[in-house]
Length: 264
DNA sequence: ATGGTCGTGTAACGA
Image (cartoon, rainbow, N blue to C red; front, top):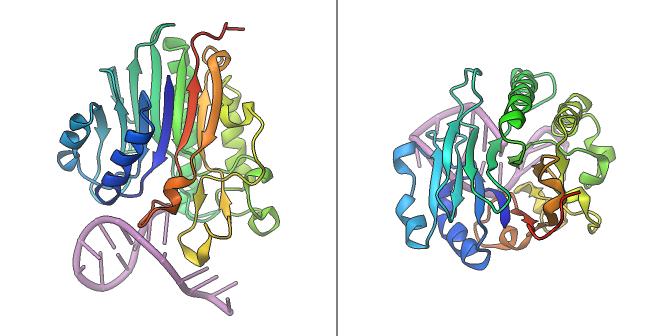
């Protein structure tokens, strides 16, 4: 089973690329972020026509997340329960697997704009609420995968120029601490389970030829619970769509779960 | 050099 995440920065603009990508990468679940469209504008038919189903939490202009799946999913949850927030940033679904139910969550974590700003404070509060909810959710669903745009580069090796980025938003210590708090729940950064090429990133600014210079950050992540970790056989970034015409500024990340692997 | 490029929606704002 392959699970993937991709911040598409407008599903309206990127829909043909997403459909093409699913044709080449027929993953069981694709978590999307930054749909930037209202619930009633979601292009469900386009996914149905290629054999996929979808659950989504839309919002006009900003945010919006979805989980695109081959199989039907259940127990759909919009947003973080008990966290009042008009911004549509999270969608949780349950998928069947040979080892039992898996909770698959698409998350678009706040960007934070600038260290010390109101949006930065909101970002840290949001991560606090996410952590508190995930702690409970892991009791209900020990097999849990949360995929998305975390807007945090966890370590300097995830930053093209750590000296230039030191202390900046996406990299600051309070944000990294919030990320480590998630890891403290027993979640694993699937990408770092494996040998990876140095300077592998998932986001490159549209400005200043950042992609051409590989001036990127690794801010899109797949986190796996302790019960899922032993099944993870691979986790890779697919840089190809970032080279498309009219690309998203993010690349997809794909994790492979192999049920034939004996759990530890 | 304090910019730069996108998407939304048609002026700024968010990223």
